[in-house]
Image 1 (cartoon, rainbow over the protein chains, first blue to last red):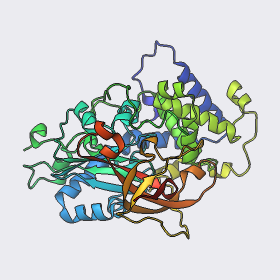
Image 2 (image 1 turned 45 degrees about the vertical axis):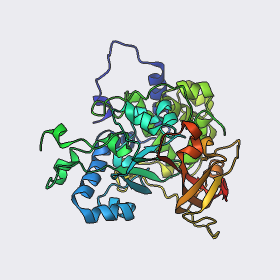
Image 3 (image 1 turned 30 degrees about the vertical axis):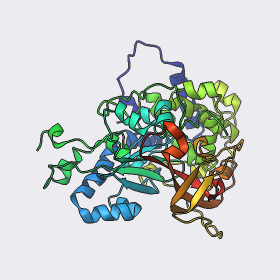
Image 4 (image 1 turned 90 degrees about the horizontal axis):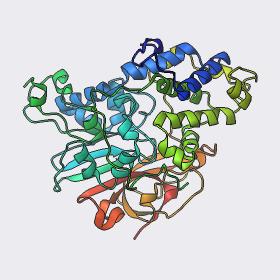
Length: 210
Length: 223
């Protein structure tokens, strides 16, 4: 989809100031040949349509379905992820942190918005927002409650603050009752939010394929 | 710098208010996607780096930083970067018409669509070998230094002065404090775990640990 195809705004409204300023800058940079319009459209297309949470869902479901791959993913995440082709900017160095019966993991970037783009796409607004960045390190259970997840005190909660160029992906726990499911079926249970760690994977009943 | 971008542990911002995952668009307006794309393409010209971009956004006036939407602050940072690097002039920004030459050696680096679509997608290496031996190993107890540099740093305020344990040595990587000043140097980087009670005292969430990636320059041995 190119930028000309968007028709979700009301054409009777005058464009906002920022819209005009961005357009003016784009025209100037194109005129100076610093921006190749085709490259710009291609880049936006990539992140709007191709690089998104389904990449991460694929990795997680593969790890759930294949114990050997899971061990590889935890021991040498960069090689394991590269074998599936999900390598790109902001995903050069990844660590995968596994949720278990005893441990739950949650990822934040308190200083800006660091996020594993090739696996999850661009971050949602809430991940970049001041409330999330402020609370996640000090009150992770309180944050999870806002996403409807309750984390018992017996479980250790590990918060990963992405202050360097390392990027973190949470490997959620595989829900019970999914024995024999295919990778495609398992992917349905993985949510973007569960790979950031603000919630757990969906239960089989939630997708109605059990 | 001790800026408002350093948000960890601050209070009073209200609830998180997530949009439902299935309904949230990648961009909320077309101009956001253009700002994102232009910023990425301009970054590939090699006139500045990621740390410099972050530092530019951190230096926005605090009230602006907090009231701008995410891509509004990217746009503000981009304009500053473009003018400072000489890619565009103030006059061009005012008139919207090209009137100054592009610095030498830049045109060869302009990214084309083929390069955008190449796999892996526009990656960067942050690994920088250093002859220095790592000072710490996994299991070592370390204290995050109580330092308040005026420039860019990735040592968040909430860990300063606190004791943690090294979990993993990530090798030698670009040191952001110098990188933001244009000096590309590798320093040892570690994953350090801090007990929540060490960071937040009586207010700490029970049974939780915060892992922060910290460069060796931010750390000293702890008893």
